[in-house]
Length: 235
Image 1 (cartoon, rainbow, N blue to C red):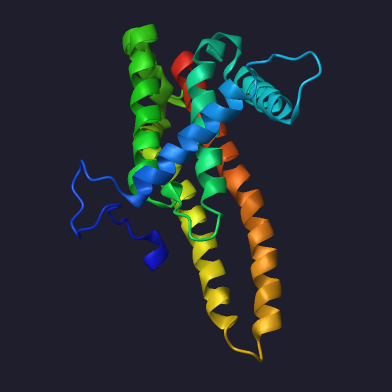
Image 2 (image 1 turned 45 degrees about the vertical axis):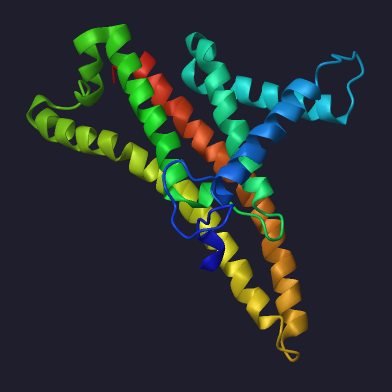
């Protein structure tokens, strides 16, 4: 599990809140990658787009449609934040697949902050837009009156569990994939099983590329679902 250890970049062993670390470096590279693709890659705004502009436009349209389809047209005003989340997670996941790289999204400290930002953001938005009517999210009016209090407690618990499941899903999947690759890499040094190990690493690496995108997609979809609940809290 040494590949997941957060280490200072400039010597020393202690990590403080202000210490530049490998996690800081790779998050900064992720932000830089997003900026290069979405800002530098599209600044020409060519009629016939190049590769960078084509990918940027594809990502833009993909996330925009996701927000509109899931949360509704009134959620489009929050598209920039959701787009930022998606692109940051995608780049962090993909950069983490580079040999000797560090994957920030394999740490619950990173995914937890992202999930809590979404949780507090949509909760505050719900109360700002609807006031106490936002609590209607927990009151299932379509259910028989006798069981509504029980369902309200269940809904309330599930609501506060959201940031936990939202963050653990992403961090757990990224950590598990990298750990499996490392296990097979250890067997690659044994001559007898080396060919099998190399084939396994190749297959898992391909799967990890898919997982890196899917986990960003799932995180974004759940963000859109939570945003929809804030905009339209009634069952």
